[in-house]
Length: 387
Image 1 (tube, helix red, strand yellow):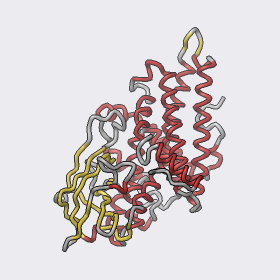
Image 2 (cartoon, rainbow, N blue to C red):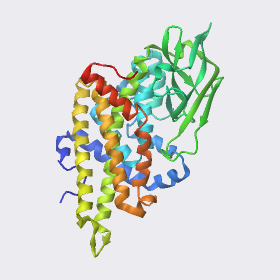
Image 3 (cartoon, rainbow, N blue to C red):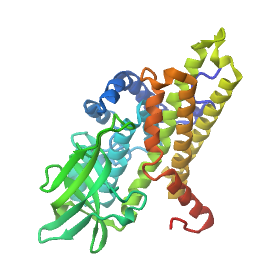
Image 4 (cartoon, rainbow, N blue to C red):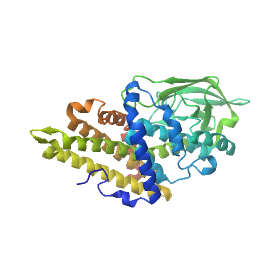
């Protein structure tokens, strides 16, 4: 009997180091995160006291070179880490995704040497928390239509505009913000407490409750020239950051699917109706088979994509396929698991409903399902169909 969600024993494809890292993170989630997530989800708060522990495990700056405080590890290991974090909660993986892919990555790729040396070690150690400001109230799928503008001044730049749905937005010490300039789209590092920089918390969420989500407002916000990312020129820069985050999401979604499948499989083996476990009924078995099949296909997709990324062969449309497929399937798995749990599926004694609600957001952020469909469509036809 296959007792876990690794139906094809893909663990055999991992190196010894990869296996050890995955095992360490799984134990960490099981022992230190799952016991507290119910409480924080109910309060709609992120457990920020866990940040030093995440930093100690090397989860910030996984692919950043050690000279800047990172771990200097592979993208495959980064994917495994995001998978294990989202087995705990999408909010936890979002925290890891943002710190790694949307804050440290743009500073490393587009920042000056001074910016790298100043900020990357602080972010890697968890002493500073970052956020990524691209999405606006009226511009989500079309970031090129952004209205936030940065005007050159004698001492630097003056920023006006707003950003919406920003993970870590209300608490971040540093925001990587994208704005239109007279020379095109540019990136800026906006520090907490800067004059004209307002951080508001978004409340009332039914999804990603255990994640900090905020609004960033800039009212004649003064930014010194040394806080401009000198190598970030044009829309390609922020889109490259999104590509990094989407890669992690593809892995994370499968982690959430695994959590739902394993919970409902165990439930079906112990829950009795008509004098036998419901796992013994054909319709329930069919649902479980569909779930483990899609998890297995998603893992295979991630494993191949991870090796391609480390070899420098992964294209943006490859990542779009993984994000699109894996999040869609994870959401279907969560909904199916909720149905098998029946009434028990709507209470937080079981984690499935939390994952199901979270995945509703993951389905649409970092590029909606439809946007990724069009990205893949363009790659196979050569015809752009966004407009």
